[in-house]
Image (tube, rainbow, N blue to C red; front, side, top):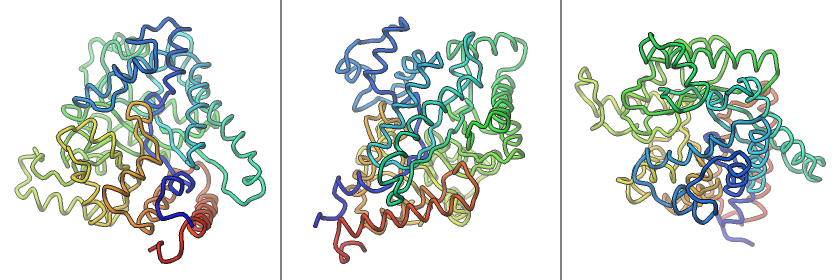
Length: 410
């Protein structure tokens, strides 16, 4: 009988990844091949060279971490490239037991003279659908002894847009030269949501939710409240990058202004010392109340351990990560990769890291896994989601029985 929580067990169990960026998860070999075909200049033309110069083990800060995206986005500017990247991404997940993922990206970063936002979304969907269709033809899935793979798309708006980010954003900025910058950012987000409504309702593309990404400090969520309100009225689910590089107020604003159903990262949830709102007279009480509110509402936090340590090197020892307190406060959490390539990680690795660093029991791992499926933005009806989650739980429990004796499951 295999011992509990081995890598084999963690790889075998059905998993989710609810916070993973498509443009941060390309296969490096594919990046090199696409760059060569599209004449995109890379710092190195070898996998080893890019691993040393761009996709590193450690980063100085968030800015350093984000450097690689200028190259990945540059090669994802055609429908063929987007479809290929999405297809390979899906298989990279399926091959390590990820049965459900929600891949996120900013579609406006890929809009250009050759493809509009609908083309971008459709290309990614084709790649995902092709991979999912192939996986779901596996004998055990067809026979019903294993659950099928499912997935959805989360579209990211950007907190701020700058010259050089993409052809589309350059044109957008030029067309609004006399509009104040933050209003331009808000209009870009609003335009994206309007496009998503059309893509989902008229084209049938499974856009299951929206997000907002980019620098938190200096770019508060209220700039994008109009776009998120429109998405809210059209029944999109919402997840918001918050508390990754800014204090608890960012999380509070994501929930109260943007109707966030989940929080991306949330690392600084308990950082009372980072509160800058002068009206807050008791920072510790603010943090306690915010955490309690999140716990009561079961607002799930998408925890990205490796990514957080890489973008916040001051954390040092992973055991100092706020995830420990999140567990202690009984918050709804799910583990995620953030960026498979940029962080050199996988869901199996993130689970193993959490187990060894925080002493997770088999029962705790089971809870975290099931939270991921239950709090997903599943692209079907609620009844269908309940049936799917039940199949996942039954399959998980079968694997627990197979991999470990009963006394080890507690």
